[in-house]
Image 1 (cartoon, rainbow, N blue to C red):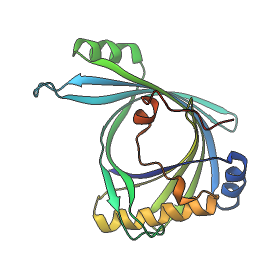
Image 2: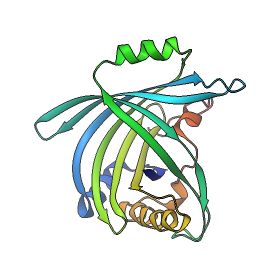
Image 3: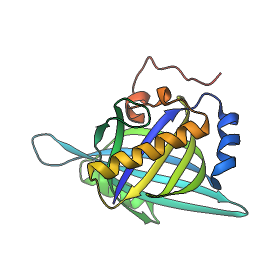
Image 4: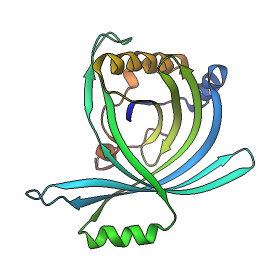
Length: 205
């Protein structure tokens, strides 16, 4: 399966929440604590990147704790002639993941394979769903300390065909506009790039 995802800076959180509640279905809140590791691949010093996520999901009166292992093959693709009228970078991720019960055991295995921790990241998110002609749009309003707030929109598809990716991009851009977020706020860099930038300042005041 392929995740087609775009994220954008959100500078007016309350306005975006109000707008989302008019057309999308609120689902839950999630706290995500992510640790990324680099594991040697055995190919000339190359490595693969994996993630362990410890997640707390709050939905109505239910609290769910999960541990998720993820291996993604990431691609940044330039799509043109969309709603924005210009090229926009979009993430097309081939994601493989599973849930598990014992993070410590998996952390030991990663260390024994020569893996090293590369990054920690936290997200506190509010989640909405919206049904579209290309499937369910997962919409997450994320606070990512110390960066600030972002709106992430993701649709999962079984193909990375360029025409399908372009169609989904157009749908996601329209959701940004309906949410009150300018397409100029789209952020093409990975969170890891932003978090490793020593000169970066939080947009929250």
